[in-house]
Image 1 (cartoon, helix red, strand yellow):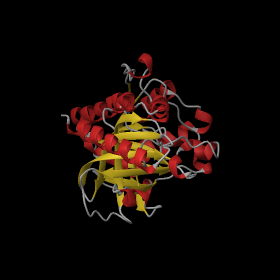
Image 2: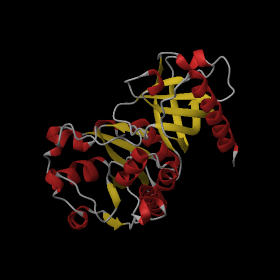
Image 3: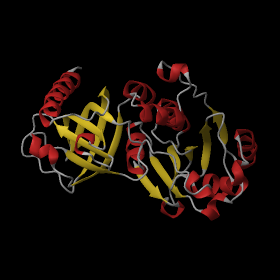
Image 4: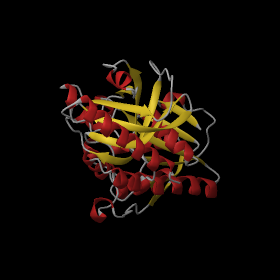
Length: 314
């Protein structure tokens, strides 16, 4: 899959495209419906499939300080899109100037001139252009004038998560904040992941016999509620069962919120300075303050046992 950062990186001989546009944070199951249709339609039309997205998140430019918690950083989103069979991802720098461009200018500069769109696939609530003035009706009207079709996909996927609320990035963020990993996995179609570099912490886990990777998470990451979780730690291409702690370590009167992952039964791991991924499978318990180190160690042993059991299940 090709990855372009800006219109200038699109090859001059790219040809016709089937395109979808959006933030696609999390690439959840609703997003997957749209992207799968893009790939399918591109095959039918003999064109290339392209996903257009933005960096930074538009809300941070339009309303500074309102950046939502991210379900997946940009490289992870591109990885997930690639798994769906897309030919290219175009990341457009979202600037204050760009946000002021009219819907007509966006269509002409991006869809027509740069990508030579043959078709555009969107959800029914798609908006674009300055002050979100463009909608799918306007897009279809412009498409008739500029030789591209517009197809609207109903992305109303529902399930048990959120009491039957349609799947969306906002629902997923609420479930993450509540520590509902089962609900998150239903919306995403996979466990929720956070990523970051392993940094040195207080090293209490090592002293207690449970050395943890202290993850300095990517800015704006959607971090689950404080507590202990079962999941996996991935480093250097290897995925390991893990017990994960999110919180401030109240037993030691900590004040800094951290994400720490203990790779179960692994000895001698040196992950400092490495970029790792932490996948959350299941919530085990809330964060607690223990009266003694012995009580903490006893509970940690139980946490690791449960995490091992859960991650061993098919």
